[in-house]
Image 1 (cartoon, one colour):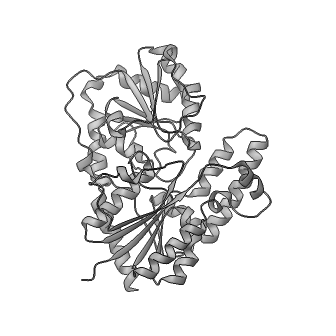
Image 2: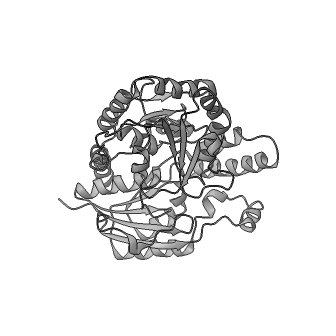
Image 3: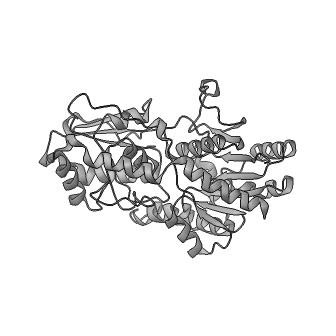
Length: 404
């Protein structure tokens, strides 16, 4: 049988595995490679998430070829201002790079691909180039319903110029996302919930849900050799607005309740690009670590992880990682979207400050050293989010698409 050839396009280099997008991209492409697919990567290497390619480990070897294009994606006030006088989505247009388009053209002229897989909506400006230089099927792997994230952020923003600006950005992003919805040959939504949303919005093309999967060989849990500390953790990109919004809500409304009732609990925060306002505060038992070397080691160091998201879309990889590492995880309903775990069995869910705080307190007042909910969480993720099983299902859809 002919070996399937895939070109995967990414808006940032998917290593190291410190954020959800990198995990989602890497584990799927790695599983596809193990299943016999020849996969090439073309990624933007951004200033915001720059990676020195000389530091890439030999174990990152599932791609046949890796190509990167430098991209300065620091927010420029001038560009944002000038965008106001156009009708383009600023979220999308800033990733529309002539140099990236030219690189796509050269790769498509050099090799015949069966599939070009776009990782997120930001890569959709290149559809016309792909169509022009290749007969490959175009697949959009949508990590979120992008405009929905910004609708939720806008809704949670106080009245004023910022809210007006966010409304404009969101309106343009939604218009763009809807205009591209049927431009692909196949849509992969990260969750069934997102897939239903796309259909509701007018998607008529072939579509499947393809959740994020984990490679459980990389999520071993060492035996506890000492009594677990009374600490909770948060980890995520600290330059992503939904994370900052949720973290601010937790620190301002939930943490004071926890601290008042049990001042012995510590809150540990990790993530890259921490804002100036987020600092360690010994008096409040808040410890800010900044970017950590190994996310999984950080998660393992604390018996509970909190995911206080108030906006967002898609699936939160850090919840899957926390559950896979047998940590107790407490999330808002929005944070848990796409993960059908049951409150109190393999995860905790709370949306109001008092309830969120109480569930944290109840956990530490229980015999949490037994870690029953953490072990149940690991079993749940292993049964539902194995990357090889998910890759097999996606590749079956690719085979059907190529044959059509």
